[in-house]
Amino acid sequence: MEVFVFSLFNGALYGMLLFLLASGLTLIFSMMGVLNFAHASFFMLGAYFAYQIADHVGFWPGLIVAPILVGVFGAAVERYALRPVHRFGHVAELLFTFGLAFVIEEVVQMIWGKVPVPYDVPASLNVAAFVWQGLDYSAYRLFMLLISIGIFVALFFGLTRTRIGLIIRAALTHPHMVASLGHDVPKVFMWTFGVGCALAGVAGVLGGNVLGTEPGMAIQLGPIVFVVIVVGGLGSLGGALIASLLIGILNNMAISYDFSLYPIFAVLGVEREADGVLADLVNLTTGGIAPLVPYLLLVLMLIFRPRGLFGTRDV
Image (cartoon, rainbow, N blue to C red; front, side, top):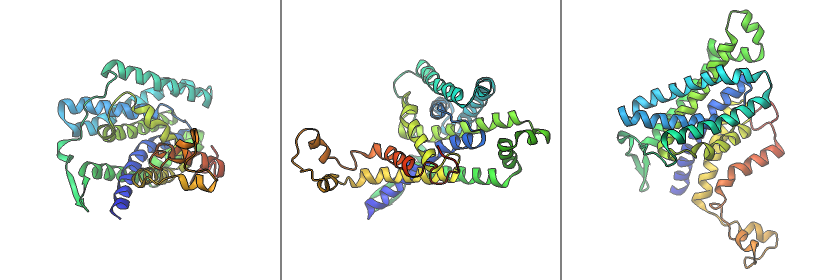
């Protein structure tokens, strides 16, 4: 029982970190229709900015300042680079953000080097919040969970219950009418993109000291974020939350229980003493294929429900 609870807890924590990262991408896509391939690079920038700030004035100022810097940088990217590309269509936008991801990675390597930097969990939160069945539950991970829940609630009510949220949603579907009411639609899109990038920055600040802050972190986590928004449904904030939790929990359960996959091969008539490639396959366990779980889920979703769990448009 304790293994189940511990796996559930760790899966939920990992899932909420994915949601923090995916929420910004979902916001940008749902409001602007831009699929930002460089989104995970803004996550990486958040981690590096927080590391640099924490090195001088501590973690807490970094938690505030780093996402703001990432958000301002994201807004500048939208204003001076992405907006001119927008008139050439979505393919041009995809290629631009694809190239931007590599540019950011190279710049990060030039400034901070190719090896991981010592960005650590703050000492005040590097303690056990409580102990259950002999297992420690980290105070920092609980803090991450609370921040993630707070951001989901703020985004949900901000977009559905406030005047600013109504203007942002109306600007996507009726930009000319919103403009005729006196609102600066390009500026609305610019700051929407900036806020989405700032959310990625928050994920970088919180996740960088747990997952490791190094130049490859964007490539490692970026593909899973796209799995999250496809499985949850393009543009669906609630779908992104459910998909993040689902992927996080399934991944942790697969590792914790480490079931053998041989019964599946036995049904197909494959003997355990098989030779060659089959010898490796029949001895696989769920822990061994845990990194593939998100992508298997993506394939199944695209086959049976292309618009995702809560999406309203096909991929």
